[in-house]
Image 1: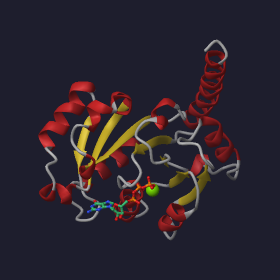
Image 2: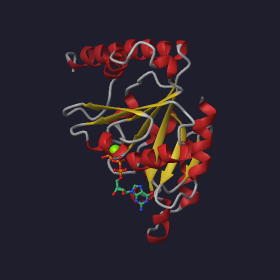
Image 3: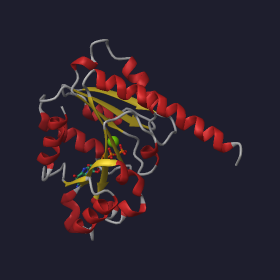
Image 4: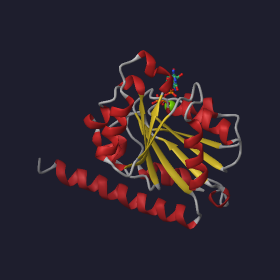
Length: 218
Ligand SMILES: Nc1nc2c(ncn2[C@@H]2O[C@H](COP(=O)(O)OP(=O)(O)OP(=O)(O)O)[C@@H](O)[C@H]2O)c(=O)[nH]1
Ligand SMILES: [Mg+2]
């Protein structure tokens, strides 16, 4: 135990330094950054596909796709005006602030100045990514209807830290026992400040409230 505690503290302190550096850089260039976190398959990339389509160049965007392996998600988002950058963690269950720092350092010099918003899709995971500050302005929790309405209570860390909670795959609510008022109540009990948006990227229901939030972040 004596050996693991200092190592863990070292990792956290190093991450915090990079996160603070990222935050300062983003602030200096007036870039809003959000960190999208949710379980594997909760609909993050589908949400981004529909978000890019609806924003239709209203924001100058960079999307950073975090995945353990493959560039499948980056490929799905190609074809819009947004710059899409894939990071592979090769095993790690979360992105860290150093990876974001190195990604930003690799951009052309004036790129940040010409960017309104960076959306980071974190590695699909409801637990680990919420422990690693990336220097974002806001975490956005993504919970999909098939996962169940009790998940905020079972996995509270993410919901405690998120400014927005999206309840995705709303079109599936009629086929499940997901209780929407209960989910909302559980999230708000943990975090009274959280804004909760139920939506479906497939039918478009609820998407406009999310788009309005993004446009206002600019
Ligand atoms: N019915 C329905 N299915 C959806 C919706 N959004 C996503 N899906 C489906 O859910 C599955 C996973 O969606 P993704 O967008 O790949 O999920 P993800 O969160 O990006 O997954 P990872 O990146 O692997 O963590 C796909 O089969 C999508 O078509 C939705 O609003 N309604
Ligand atoms: Mg994805």
